[in-house]
Image 1 (cartoon, rainbow, N blue to C red):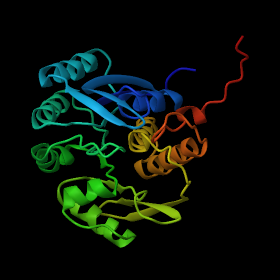
Image 2 (image 1 turned 120 degrees about the vertical axis):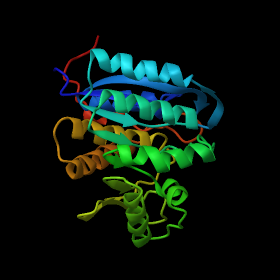
Image 3 (image 1 turned 60 degrees about the vertical axis):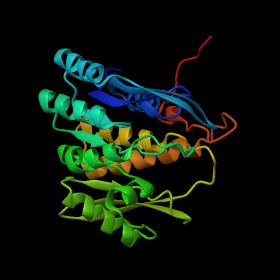
Image 4 (image 1 turned 120 degrees about the horizontal axis):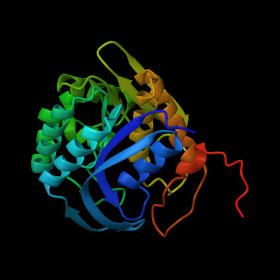
Length: 270
């Protein structure tokens, strides 16, 4: 099969392969599109935690973005881990130059293990300058709480936080509800015209490493192929739910999900 679209991923590397740019590439590829990358940081991590984070020079990040897109222009961009003010400024300058309209931002702030992946000043620049450049922002509840300075304990709180993010300049917001202690996960899609709540059953497992990265990349892929944004969110949520439901059991900590759940292999490998 030929790829349906081209996607540029701007994110950090996860050496364990479950999250970050590795999860993004797997997701985009398994859903039938072509992935390009700009690496923002290199992490040494496994399912039990993050050992170290090494920053990539912001000038090199800009070169990766601009030089790649000069040759192969992406249909959409997915942005993940941006850990410092200089990195965020570099990304903003780069996306202004390449002028791609479909941009999905996953505001990665904390790893599943609890390691902080972004500093306070970077959060302020992301909130005040980057959000308004994006088509969709996909925070989980802790990220939405940090960005909006509110407490989220219900779906109503999620909607309220989403509206605050719209006031910051976001065109659309998907607040992910996986952190609420409920049997049904409710993900809230908000823009200035509508509110849509996507519901799916919570799967009991410790293996959820990379779900946020995977969801934003899945949404970007469906959106880049011409699906409406709200439908792309619905399809992305379904893809992640199926990936969790595959119940991989790799590693001693919070293990990865199965990005290959969408692929049916019809050839025998010898």
